[in-house]
Length: 512
Image (tube, rainbow, N blue to C red):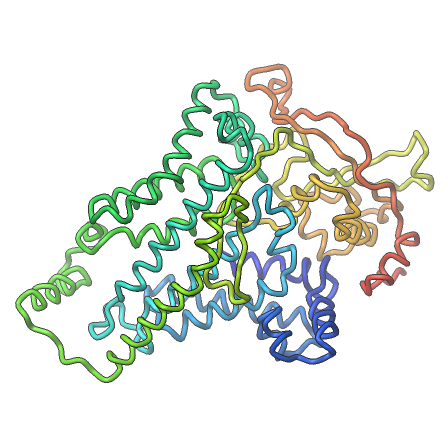
């Protein structure tokens, strides 16, 4: 899914003419490090794009995404993988993430909740490398069974994810301590779905119960991992159930699907056996035979590669332990930060979500007009709708998980701040003024389709609220009601943006 999202959206977001061109970003990094691609530059932005062709960066981004998509599709459909393939997937996605800028990491909004799934996906992928045999694509490699060190690596990951999320809530917004955060969450989350519309109207006592359950799952259940086999399995079941509930009630990209993966490490072969066919010669029967032989004292002679693998696994465990030191110190710190990496390869990270919950939903609505004078009271302003974020009051909230519309999320975050702090939104306005086809592919509607481009674009700031099911607005087909706050950014035209483009080295649209 991550590579599919990258293939569909990277060109428009970080391509040659993207909102935040990655080529310009790499050039600036190179310039900062005295015009050289040295170890400092590689450490600051670890990506193989440094060594690839920049003359056609769009094709380069496409090739990386397609290669990753094809490789992951092979692993998913065949159930076969080795360290080489998993390493390749990890390197490819790391390369895309580290040139994605705020399209991938929205770290300046760490107090609210960020796209921590990028770091989580990279850490999960790195652990997955050591779960597989080196070369063979056998689904049941007899000489390289999964190491308990790697299994505990996954358990350590889910422990940090959940405990980090719980601690940031307790230390953050007081509504988590007062058990009132769920009164607001469904309405103000980044991209609500139809279930959230109805869940928002649950009685106050149910929202308090939800908050208590959340605290139990995130602050108490993680310690079940260390209380023996049965409690470890209970931990896995509760975490998976919790993630399924989050999937049903929101569009948090592939985050919750991804969090299920390390939870699977809580189960052993016996507890997962029912998922596999009992047909003769199948994987389940072969595993049982291997276990019977091992119980009878029959062991395959160890090959040289097995000893090397043991050394690799022990080294892997020591690496994870060393990189976990700042992460543990962060968990113990009253000024805990979330969704942060302490190493450039994002191998062991801090996690957390919704340390602060917004109490009101605000949206930036982009509008265009063909009027010569944007200040003319008679000017007709027409709105652009995004793929999934709230806009049209009568449009039903969407279901997109595990897919992800990055621009919709950027717009959600931008509504918390000013356009001066989000220069990319002015760049977006310029692209709409130019009717740029690639950028319009990220939008749900273009009110000027088949017509001349708009002369002016402006951003309006609105407060959005769910309509009440069965109420007046709902009976008129409205899912949302809104109230104008004021202008977000003033009307702009292409001519007025020329210097803005030049100061940032962005390609200025060539007009006919």
